[in-house]
Length: 95
Image: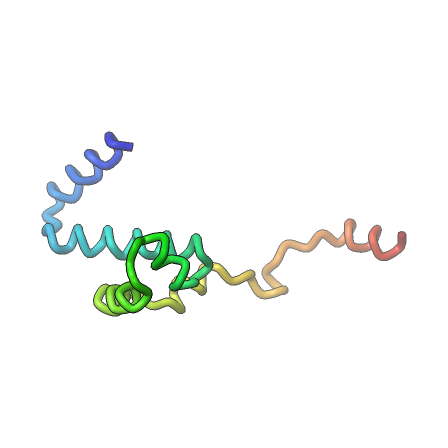
């Protein structure tokens, strides 16, 4: 993992990303990951992060991170877009 981080930092530096942009991007991605792991539950995410829920909410607002954006990635697809296992369903209904 250290090599991957070193490589990422090198790429960011060589492409001209400022320190502030790098920190902001890291925070956004990290918070998105933790919130996703807790299915958008800010209380549980804040607890894991070791911060108060209000601090998490304020940080999300400062970073422009919308909870709806996080939750949208967690929702099941609409029925028309889900894979259909018709043979399984038909066998299950007949039996």
